[in-house]
Image (cartoon, rainbow, N blue to C red; front, side, top):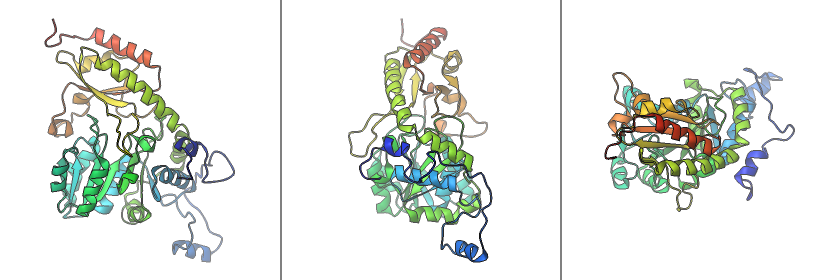
Amino acid sequence: MTGQRDIATLLVQDDLASGPVVPPIHQSSLFTFDDVAQMAATFAGENDRPVYSRGNNPTVRVFEQKMAMLEGGEAARGFASGMAAISASILAFAQSGDRIVCVRHVYPDTYRFMRRLLPRLGIETSFVDGRDLDAMRKALDGAALLYLESPTSVVFETHDIAEQARLAREAGAVSIIDNSWATPVFQRPLALGVDIVVHSASKYVSGHSDTVAGVAIGARERIDRINTLTYPFLGGKLAPFEAWLLLRGLRTLTLRLRRHDESVTRVAGWLQAREEVERVHLPEISNRPGGLSGRAGLFSIELRDGVDPVRFCDALDLFRLGVSWGGHESLCFPMAVGLRQAGEHNSLVDFGVPQQLVRLHVGLEEPDDLMADLDRAFATVNTNIQGSP
């Protein structure tokens, strides 16, 4: 951080460069040199000139510097997607014969990556309840890496990140956390002791549902390891135009997150009082230093028996059916249908997530309109609720 400036100021005031208030797009694959001596010095690491945009690009570099500053890290690496950031980070610190410990209810493709691909590379994964620190301590014995989410996907469990990071350090394991949901506006895991923060920047960092991107942030030594071992060879580079879109999105990040926080609190509270809703899965604000300080717009509801999740979602108008989140629009996603994949057990089945679960994203629309939309949907479905008169 620069002095005591608020994160909102840092997002708007681009203090990383002078000149244009909007960084230019360096839409070039190649950068040339004045002479062979300059080229040789660059290849030797004696300067930081860009060479080829699969390696470094000036527009991407501004985005990486901004994300490192916001998360409190020394360095960052941008990627073409959140999964590119996740896979490159994991593979940089885990190798054949290693074991990973991962909290349950992580992002489904992260789960599938650990279940389907990593075993082919000789890397095994143990899944634990992130709230059970004793179980995590035991699982970490001999593990190379601890992978975290808080709040988790699907059911939005919150964890004691600082204690989890401490357990990883004691076990000699590298800790990685997906901070896409909270963003550095609501949570800064590096300050809690986590080694690497990853984001699906497609979500709130972008905020406009027009970009697919990822980023990893941490100490320079950790990011250098990613840059050396995995990033150059997996090919998941961040393009300059996407980086420019992300920089645009970052300027309004605090405004959007505060609106999501206000709106989701109202909508979730209204849903909690509905007889059709068994339970609302919305993270609680933490009173621990460095804990979760606000709520993003993504949460889930567990519908009562007799309320068909598919018919409910089909009856919605403002909440559109969609698999991503973090943009301006409100979305719904029936988890039992959305996570069903032929011939595959997934985290929904393995960890007993209720079949009546519906994930909702409260966008930037007027909350009263969203509640009216939900009310109309409840009125159109069969609400033969078990136990109702």
